[in-house]
Structure formats: structure tokens, C-alpha cells
Image (cartoon, rainbow, N blue to C red; front, side, top):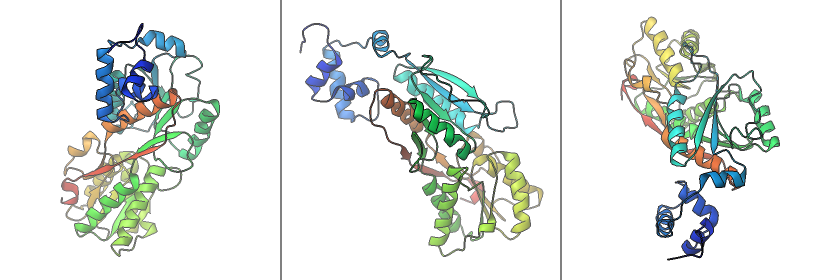
Length: 342
């Protein structure tokens, strides 16, 4: 198998019977390419002794070969101001960039900053990955501005209709439904939800909607006054649960919108002499590392951060390449431990 002159990705595309963008995706290891197609493309590339000239490619496209990951501040008990769930996301995004030949620029942003600063025009990065955003109703205006500027960006968050840009997120609704169905199967029928379920926090809202659906399906009344707002911190979960016990002293389960909220709830229950799970079962969402180390171990909804990191990077690279990229939802799974008497 030979070509005249130096082989190109167009030569590979012709020989493999695929498009040039498919060749580009296969060479950067994108999971969007069928494994058999990827193997065929890589075999042809090896036979042609094809090498990607990253510097020349970047120069032609006026690209930096760098992606920017923007963290946004979260209230935490330490000085990191980073939600611990995002620590594992950082690792998976870094690995995904390395496998695809990209450098990663990590930047911490305060929510009060104009974080729509133009990374692309300054050639700092070819596109942005956004983790965390605080109040969605406030952040939405900034996301719309990024769209208007033509900035290439993807964000981790609820993938719902009508949102600006591309969002990658887990199936929050299904996760909430499955965890509540588990609680019901454990004999729990007086289930409260701790987490802000308003439009300001769409992930929590979807988790709450799933929980309500599971209760309705089981013929259990979902009481609106047993949903109490909390942001994703232990302190907020603790304070909300103290208030919740005033409203619902006979509850037998707490489903928290995040693991941090659930850990705060467990502390509040313990201080009031209630046993977990004997008196009140507790479940969370995220499966942060701490969830398996608290006593009892916290049952939670697990988000696949390795898959999420790969999809975020590939979606952003697709946007940079001019491809049509849509928002995606990935499955969630239950991680059952002692807090629900699993």
C-alpha cells in the first residue's frame, strides 16, 4: 500500500472508505468511532507510516494544542473551594487530554469574575471545559454570552432541552428514581429530600423529580414540605436536616442531593439520637471517595467520572473540528452500602 509523496489523512480516509473527520477522530482515540473502524484506520496509518505533525497542524489551524479546564469556586470547609466530586473529574479529563495529544490548562475561577474571558482569541486554549457554575439562572447568561462569542466550550451538568451550548451529564432523574425505589424496597415509606430542587440547581431538581416519580409509582405520597433546600456542603446538609426533623419527626429515610449533604444529614441525625440506618436510612449522590469511609458507609448514586472525562474532551474536540456535537446523558449506577441497610 503506497501513496505518492507524504501520506495524508485524506489518503487514509480514501483507503479506509470513511470521511476525513472520522480518520481524525480515530487517530486521537475518540470513543465516538466504531472499534473495528478505528482498528482499520490505525492499520492503514501504520502501513503508510503516517505521522501526525502536531505543530504543523496547530499552525495551519491557528490552534494552541491546549484545552482549558475552568473550575468554579464552591463553599468548602478547607481552602480548596473545589467540590471533591470534581477531583476525580480532573484526573479523568487530564488522562483523556494526554491520550489525544493535548495539553490541559487548569484555571480556578471565582463566580464573581467575568469567567467568559476569551481564552481562544488570546490563543491560550482552543476551547473550554467548565466544571461547576453555582446558581444556574445567573450562570446561564454567561453561557449564552460564550455561545454568542462563538467560543468552543462544553460543560458538566444536567443535559436538558433549551440549554445554551453543549452539556454532558449523568441521568440525574433515573439516579433519583432508582435510589428512591431502593429505599422503598427496604421498607421505607416516609422519605424526605434534602437539596435545592429549584430551577437554580437543575441537577438537584432532576434527582428530586426522579425520587417523586418512584414514590408515586409505589403509591406513596411525596410531601412537598419534606423537600428542604440545601447547597452541596456538609454544613448545609446538617442545618437543613435539623430543620427537617422539626417538620417531619417521623421520617424514616433521607435522600440527599449530594454526598456532602448526606454526610451532614447523618451527623444531625446522630446528634439527635437517631440511628442510621435502623431509624433513618440515608442516601446520597455522586459517590465521592469519602462516601465509603464514613460510618456506616454511605449508599449513593455513582457517576462514571472516567467516561465523563473522555466524553467532555471528545465533545470539545469535535466542536473545535467543526463537527455537530449534541448534549449527552450518561447512565448512573447505585453504590449500595450500610446507610440504607443494603
